[in-house]
Image 1 (cartoon, rainbow, N blue to C red):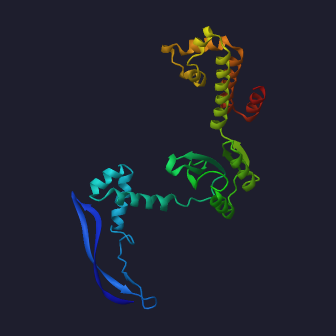
Image 2 (cartoon, helix red, strand yellow):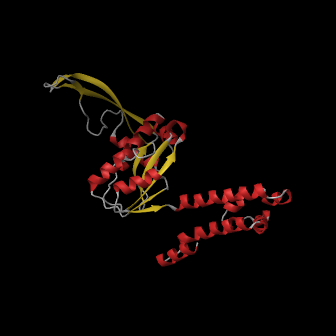
Image 3 (tube, rainbow, N blue to C red):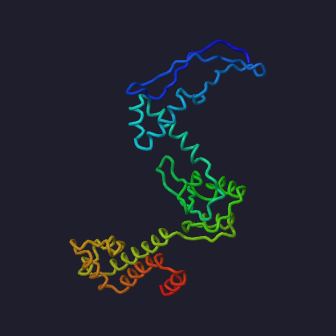
Length: 278
């Protein structure tokens, strides 16, 4: 190295009492004899290529556990962008590359993040709830990186919970041929609710004018759990009147209620028996 003078550098440090603290340091400029690049020398206790100290970043992380980004920025006397950058760096370091050996059961689902970002595909450790991977978009290529990492990790996945999309179903079969595939409760119940809604529409279309008054506004009552029906609004009575009016609607409704009970049964033999009866 060859010294090439000094450069003034400013860095934010933790507050001293109620006062904001800023350090001004003359940093040596160093030239590499091999590549002829001239760079600022590194300083102990400072984040590389950042204008704050490591202790400052540590304090921000501690405050973020209790305060919003805006409040931390106001207290520390810096911009919200700096606090957000520190927060993001810590999250990336802490959760960026979770271990893939530990989980035995995983869950895969898609979330909609608005028109700009659209879809993300998320993989979760079912036991701990930790996010293992986030793939951009949806479909067979969204988790291409995750499947490659999983093969190299030697993880032994015993089961995978997914929705009923054919793409996710095929991906699990292809990448986890020995794992059991589970369709999660939410999507199964949602499918049953959709069928129940269609039955209600068919009944409403066929009903006479006199009976349509009873069926009006019935959709949400059919989808509600019985314990959530509001007695003060006579919801239970209205529901029963509609079920008495049409047998096919009543059968579909009670099938929906019985289906939700299947996940609450133990042991496994009771679940199998109830599912067969259903």
